Amino acid sequence: MMEGQIENIDLVYLWVDGNDPVWMKKKQETLNSHKTQFSVNLAGRYISNDEIKYSLRSVEKHLPWIRNIYIVTDNQVPSWLNVENPRVRIVDHKEILPEIALPCFNSSIIEMFIYRIPGLSEHFLYANDDNFVNADLSPSFFFAEDKFPIIRFQFQFAHKTEIRLKKLLKIPVNNYRLSIENANKLIKSRFGKHYPGISHHNVDSYKKEIFKEVVEEIFKEELSGVLTNHFRCPLNIQRIIFQLYALATKQGHLKYVGRRESCRIPVQRPDYMRFILKYKPSLFCLNDTEKATDSDRARIRPFLEELFPEKSSFEK
Image 1: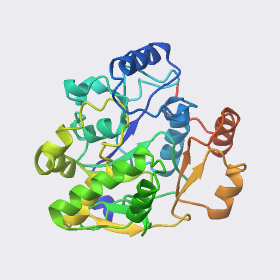
Image 2 (image 1 turned 180 degrees about the vertical axis):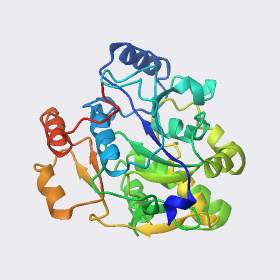
Image 3 (image 1 turned 90 degrees about the vertical axis):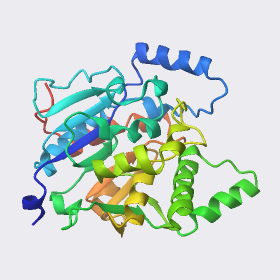
Image 4 (image 1 turned 90 degrees about the horizontal axis):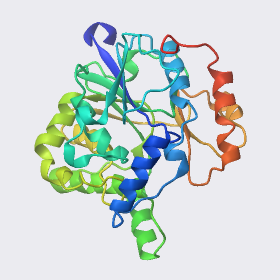
């Protein structure tokens, strides 16, 4: 069905090696020169455990129909990456981000401009390096018959109420949640629509046309106003804005999902494999959080090596 309708589907990743001393120096210098900006420097946000290597193994195994893979990064290349593979390309921030946004350590800003990647297919998938595919999936898992993306949310009816209550009680709300709420407010003000829930935080499907409309036309002024947020902050607008816009303009299909289709496994959980075997999710995210410790993170690589032991063609 879908295989014959959408000719090319690419996959985009964001990746950073937070262990790189050159990158660390640049980050610290930027922090020092932007002291007024908010920044929560969660270690797991930048530290690399080679998750993307195992994510690529999962993709090659379960999504063999993916055409090209683009890895967006800041003048870095994974040491194990086979750059001779014609299906993979490193994309530097400077290729796609406006100069005013550089240097950028804020994924919300970087994600905003992935549609500018030269050669990117109109229909594409986007993933963080901690997203993994755990079952054989066809393009129709990601795009409907009308070629619009299937948008997967976790149902959270009280999301807005939770944020308001925390603010009232002066309980800190993390920047991720606030950036989602900022996106919801923009859609509500422009289209009068509200969709309860948050993104399932996993591999998602998009159209370049949607990104272009949102960034260059519909919310050009609002998004331009956050470009100098070099780090995550409460003023950010999360990429859910593209999904909400697609829904509001009838260019996407909303689907609420549970753990058997898409699940997030906090790194601090004691037994990753038990969770996988219990739910057998099609997609999963091994999510680092502020609650994770270094000993928790040390378990990531052995687990992924056990789950995806075969090298991919993207490795040397």
